[in-house]
Length: 491
Ligand code: ZN
Image (cartoon, rainbow, N blue to C red; front, side, top):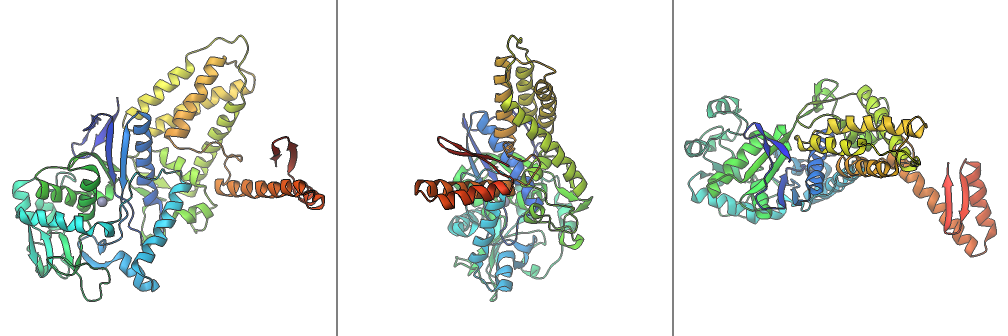
């Protein structure tokens, strides 16, 4: 039975969904004002693993991952320019052009990483009315106040009735000392009060009318409003990166309790952070590497390009609650490891059962151990090490050193399909082990296209074109075989 670590209770708990057979899951998505980087890849892959595993267990999962396109200011303490609006100003674009552009690029990167799309992907800007209604509820319950057109959470008042800071393990005193004194705080009662609605300054380009002012919702509000809209006032899982625990998730809890009188989320899950060559990721360290730069090898810290599958595999090689340190050397090692799995998988497809071999329980034991590891708070590194053990056996049979019975071979293929491909989401089918999948795909597409053109030429009795395509591909090292359904080729 699946156990997951609940950040709120600080222990592993058996997962019991609110509604039998169904799971509601919310994960904080990206603020779309720049290209996705490793910090985006890790939560996306972590919760993709959970999403895949829950479905494997037979649950019907409603997975909501939002797009933040308004209200996320440069400083989490409600100050500075809106991140999207700033980019729009610098690039002389409509804010929604910025949002669309980076959302498209985010989707492309996620697809390359084989991250499944969520069931619902709501935009904050599309849920202003829901957010206003949520703010109004908090005001009605007396846990917020209006000041100069903005609405702030009255944290001190809230903390008298509910435990503020319970998720991150902070108390109000810690929070008081942590909160920076910034401009505009004169309108707050206390520095740690956070904005539920902000009055827009004249230069602020994204704003909506509200009972309090022409303005925009506070960043934390969107997840409270959209989470409850699509998953109900109580739902199963809320996830995100550890960096979101405070203030973002703590604020979400406060907003829910203040508006609804109770907690919304049953299991809070957080993935740990990524460092690059031992350092925190950040623009000031010049180690802020986007996913595209990884895929193309275009950064001074990278020795070569790394395929999306190498990145995915490397992230899954660590447990999601451990830190991961990225370096070119570590990625090169992961690339080699992935190539070994890929080779074993491809050999597994070609293996022939040995006549007369007795069936062992190796494949069923492997399946059991993989399930046990996944049930233990998604222990993907154990699953990967089990697959490496299994690869040794596959290679040994492939080399004729061991035998395998038909039944066991079939079971083994099923285990690899389930755990390596369906659950870990590794694309092991690719033709060139350890190569760049994107390039391989492009190559396959191009050669298929040329050979389809050749088929058409043949149908039109255009022998000149048909021969030219064949001869030139052959000269480039392709072996082309005509078959009754069309063609086959190898390089
Ligand atoms: Zn959020």
